[in-house]
Image (cartoon, rainbow, N blue to C red; front, side, top):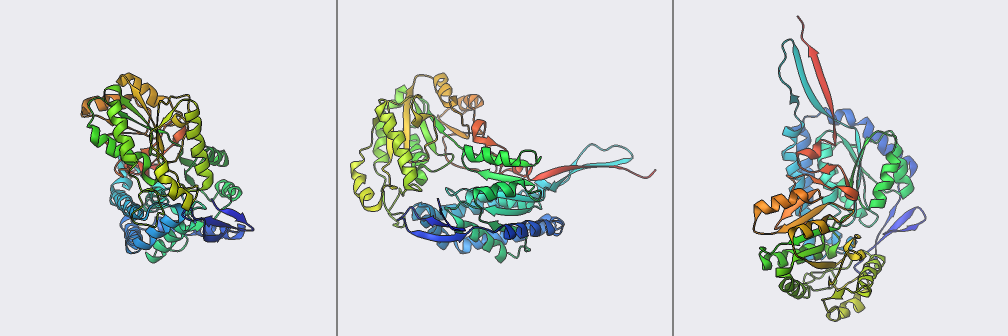
Amino acid sequence: MGDLVSNSFETISPVDGSVVTRTDYSSSEEIEAKLNAAKAVADSWRDLSISERAVVCRKALDYFERNKESIAAEITQQMGRPIKYSAGEVAGLQERGSYMIDIAEECLRDIEVPEQAGFKRYIRREPLGTVLVLAPWNYPYLTAVNTIIPALMAGNSVILKHSAQTPICAQRFKAAFEAAGLPAGVFDIVNLTHQQVDEVIRSPKINYVAFTGSVNGGACVEESASGRFIGVGLELGGKDPAYVRSDADLGFAIENLVDGAFFNSGQSCCGIERIYVHRDLYQNFIDGFAKLTADYVLGNPTDPDTTLGPVVSKAAATMIQQQIEAAIDMGAKALVDSQPFQDSIDRLGSQYMAPQVLVDVNHDMAVMTEETFGPVVGIMPVDSDEQAIDLMNDSPYGLTASLWTRDLETAEALGKQIQTGTVFMNRCDYLDPALVWTGVKNTGRGGTLSALGYESLTQPKSFHLRLPA
């Protein structure tokens, strides 16, 4: 994360430790002016038709398409994702943003109720006012667009505070909406200290907060919003499991779960962090999984041949390594030889980590119960569906879970028992914008995307009109 330097912070690249940019924190006067501007423009933006708002939002998405190559390079430099994958985030932003624009008219239209003689009655969805988006660094565009586009389409104004690791992404959003002709004040960005975040959330000029980050961060957001009677959407930690049944397509499951565990160096809220495999397939599964994992190319993420980049910081790498070593001390076995990766680590720095697969693990180990957010996964054998479900649910988190099987009916039956916001079959680590993105337990509350994503960003208002006699 950025180091505090006077009234500014530095963004340190995990690629090489260089300073990507130095950014000034927003002053109290600047913050107040932006909140006032958002409030002042609220009525004029709300009064535009949905189709008029859509024109502006689509032009903003066009900006990202025009600039996708430079934006991809910025993502890589700020948070370390291999350049061969970074452009995919821009494509994902466009997919999600376009979908939410496409469904806005239907989602925001008046809700009709049965006719009653002498009355006109309906429910209208009205904007909340100003939405504060607190976005993380690991998917800096995808996480932010989930709220920004539907909030604007619903007639709200938006203030974006991005992670200190990815401030250029916030600047790109601002440039996109300026290029699209969005009226001044409807969207703006701020750079805030933790204390300033607390103060802004407490401001009566903020009407909703969307936060993606840690459980502790989510608790702080809730505390700041306490007593304000405003909505708070929270997407927090995860320890997402997978279960490979005895009837699974073994090769397909291995290929997809390796990617699900190690894409983005494991720094994904819905990345696979623990796997349970039916004992009938267990040995073949771990053999194939370890072999494929060893094929990753660890290196400088600006190199197009690199498939595994650094984690976000040396501090993060230390925490991840401590989890691995603690598990090994408790009896876990590491399947991937880290020596072939050592030259890259020695040359590039300790934030570069070899991918690791641990077996002989159990739920007494932090690596199987606490969020890791790095390139390591633990794998356990199970003897039945019941045992697998018990282990999958043995977690304080509940974002996604994936089932690998050829049996749709069984997958649906097991899915009913799994305590997560999303259940996948033969897929993982993916957001479908047609489906609500939500979590249970300590993963948070509320939901983004899909038609349901508009509900938290609007306030229902009933019209009960008695007609003249």
